Length: 290
Image 1 (cartoon, rainbow, N blue to C red):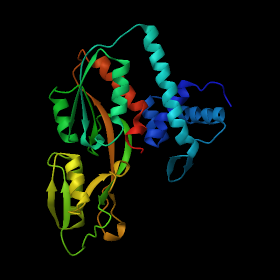
Image 2 (cartoon, rainbow, N blue to C red):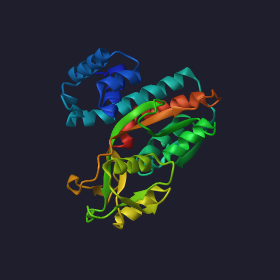
Image 3 (cartoon, rainbow, N blue to C red):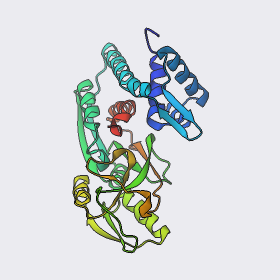
Image 4 (cartoon, rainbow, N blue to C red):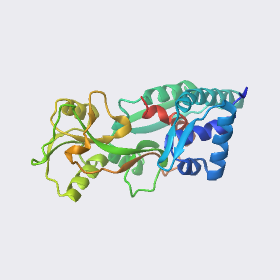
């Protein structure tokens, strides 16, 4: 067992844990895939445990890998705080950060709290909106950094993680194949709304909208009441709701990317935006692992 874990190997481990892909982790870190594999192998040797299980279907964290997540974050956070202290630099300025409604029920507040503790002189302004709206505000120069979903064809943004979209609803809900699918959706330009409608149209399935709300809590309330089904990230299924079983014949929704996107204009808040982006990438597993 090693006395000290290499921070570079820990950063690589976190990138793989969040993307569940050695290829995506290499792209995020700007290194070769062989370097990612080497870092993970050396970290596993240092720990004396297997951190990932790998097969032809993909990459998954082992039980020891799940434990390493917390340790890796703690070590890297301590390193960053020590480096900031001895550099003698303090970030300042106004940072306009947008997060999509998807993160309302996650541990994003913990990441933001840690950022504010590390950078008390940054004036952080948080906007919570639909992903589509946040992208529009970013393009208009109204935000400096956005954490949101992106459309499958959109190449912009730094990947935080991939996830699968699934249909969810109340456990007692039984969609009737002979009746239009009752939909609970965000208003336009909601990305999950668009993907859900496109999937139903491709299947030739009739649908009707039973609830529209710009608030995730509003959608959850309607779903818990059994009004209908909603498309949602598999890793962010709210308490009290379950995935609709495949036997009910609802169409596949595909995958969705959650990304960080910086504003196009260089602003005084750019260094603060870079620091917050690094904090989110380092703790990204907290956003979708309960």
